[in-house]
Length: 69
Image (cartoon, one colour):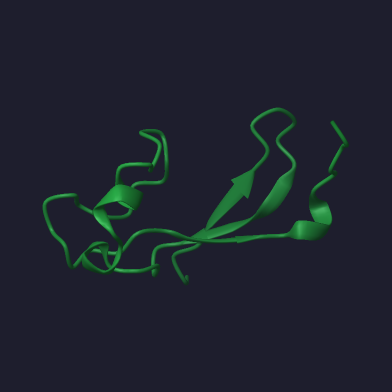
């Protein structure tokens, strides 16, 4: 098991890709970007430990359907 978690569409449940727990360390991400992480985002790191890692997303662009606005 490589730690990946399936990412699905919130509306239809369709497969979009995977999230991995081996993203950047918190210490390498500017504070202003850390503040933009949604509270319901995948929690792979401990905010009190700068050496824990954030999630890395690998989303299949081919599975997305873009609509003009």
